[in-house]
Length: 168
Image (cartoon, rainbow, N blue to C red; front, side, top):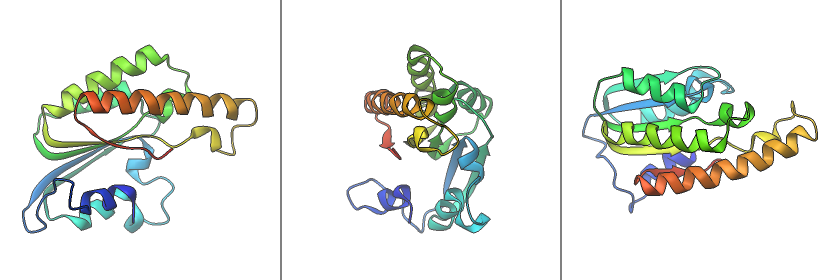
């Protein structure tokens, strides 16, 4: 089971009843679309959808999406949700976006999302420096950027009462 599914099942986390139908938006990068999953049944989105009875399960995943693009997509979607799950930030690490830009974009994204949902979960990207496609010294640079990104995302999540899940 995923870290998110485990978190949502914990008794201390406010959760939705399995008998109550809810609306969920799962928004973010290619991981949201299911890239890297062995099958459509093993994608994180599918696991979440199977765990809850939903009136509405909206999947908004795009390849190579950054935080600002994720925020733009959310602003275009005028619906209200019970739960919004966000997974993005890896492209901002890889493309060397400034941390000032990242802070501003995450803050904007969380402000928008908290007006649209009862509960908000943010999943950070993993250590992108571990990817075998990045040789040293790029792997080291991405590792350091991933660490700094984690710290920033955790701080901003706490400020906006967003449930924070680190995949680092």
